Length: 207
Image 1 (cartoon, rainbow, N blue to C red):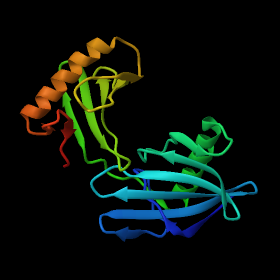
Image 2: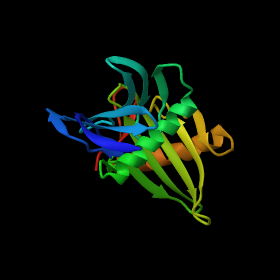
Image 3: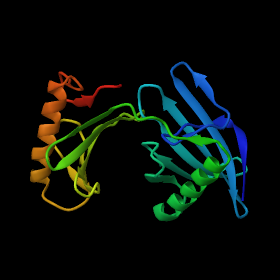
């Protein structure tokens, strides 16, 4: 296995720092790495005020035979865009590429800025707003038991409109989590840490 810098560019929340270039308010960076007899490239595009995205690519000559995307720059590939490969296998390749990049000093963590933390008698809550360069905006709430410090649940508001849509981690009733989410939003708005836009979108303010 080997890794080398490339004239491309990358950034990850997990940010990949191959050769980095800044175009206006966007950082772009990247590097290549080899697994077996195949060479892959990771390319990242990161706006300064939004979550960027990373692309994993394999080429044969000038032809792209495989491409996958990490839409949140969280180190987990979300979708295979091109190629006959399972998402599970693509994620393994991407994970290994990130590990190699980190070992080579080309990857660093990006400080997540849209985060609001609060607590009650039983739990700690961490709310994150994701504003993706690809256009999506959503909120993700982590619920952590104070007694065990274990993440009990992670729930997602896909429209950032105050309504939870799915449980990403954990078990329980979405209606019960919605009550907790409402309390976190209300407290954050009251403290001036969260805003509700005219179109009803809740966003954690940048710190």
